[in-house]
Length: 302
Image (tube, rainbow, N blue to C red; front, top):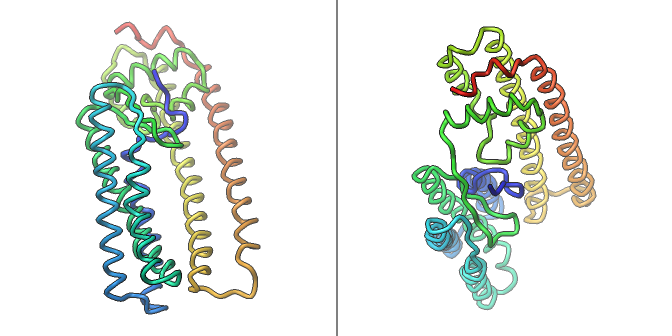
């Protein structure tokens, strides 16, 4: 089975998340551009409407090309999205610069590009997410684009069976690597507890040890989300400072690049270290808990 090594979340959910993130960032810049610089004019309202319309169109076109291919096959190689997206945004950008000059570059980027990216992510994310739910699959895409593939999305009963099989293997690394596949367990701890209650053939001691494993998974899920939240907020702050200074919203007595450059390195390094520490701590804790499990009591045959 293909594994989502390069894109650990289904692109439907990921793009919906990105569209929400981009909407906040876009809203911040557009608000300050309109109020602080007085950039809001009828022409720039047209930029905004164009950006939203073109973004939605690109998202719809991408899904209309990709989804039919995934219905017929497990994988799809699609190259058309790149030239279509370039034409949709690039041609109007060149026309604006030809008619209004380079001075209109930043306003066009502000009122058209950010809405374009937000709308494209929202539209494609909505259609991909709809396709995933209706067909009980997860759709992934390689980070460089072009290649898409789908994986089956098992129901809770099948996930729970795979969970018990991995417990029997006593391989703690297996639980971490499952985060990047369609069989991930981390988000199903509460559902697994319900399934555990149904399996009365599992003795009380084994049941107690399994509950400890599920609690550990839930705790580390919260910690992992906290690390990712810190990373996203930090990146958003740097983007606001960088673009805000470029647009003239902020004025400092120092070069913003002297701050953003080192800060970016610190944030990415801290994020990488945080994920590494969480992974190792998770594996050590899980190894200790798995050692207490009597695999003969897991009732895997039923």
